[in-house]
Length: 194
Image 1 (cartoon, rainbow, N blue to C red):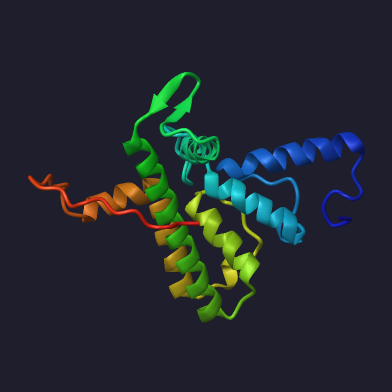
Image 2 (cartoon, rainbow, N blue to C red):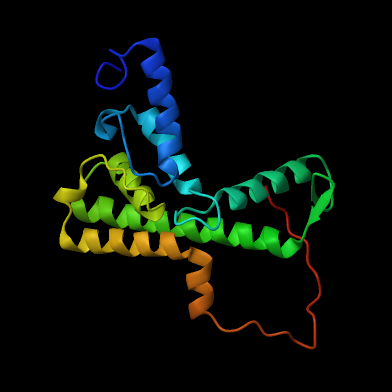
């Protein structure tokens, strides 16, 4: 791509590619014009921004450990294990359920905000999706459309940024009822999935 790395030397291309793969984890810096990246590169950056930083950092996203738990869970299911195991350790089911809940809540938020902004602002999908995920991951990267958004769309982006920083599960639990344990259990049911 001549607008980004096409005219760089081999060493500069490697360095730019490395920097572009690290910065979506909430650094917010860019050495290449984000608006000039190809759609496939933008989508890869979106995935990296959605995963975000590691726990305990000031970054947003679903967090690297949440993504890791999902990958480990899928691998254990594919290999036919009943328990979620990694490095001769077993993960508790609560951790797996929290990882799934965090990811699903984040996906619902990002998809909903992207759809609302795409329809209300009459903009192309990919740049709006990029801005929304960037806000959720509190990354700071932009394709350049933020300044042309209406006040309503900017408020949605601000809310998305807040939820991304605090965490979707934390906010959901703050507004949900406290967990109640019953003295009875419903019968178990099996359904077909996949």
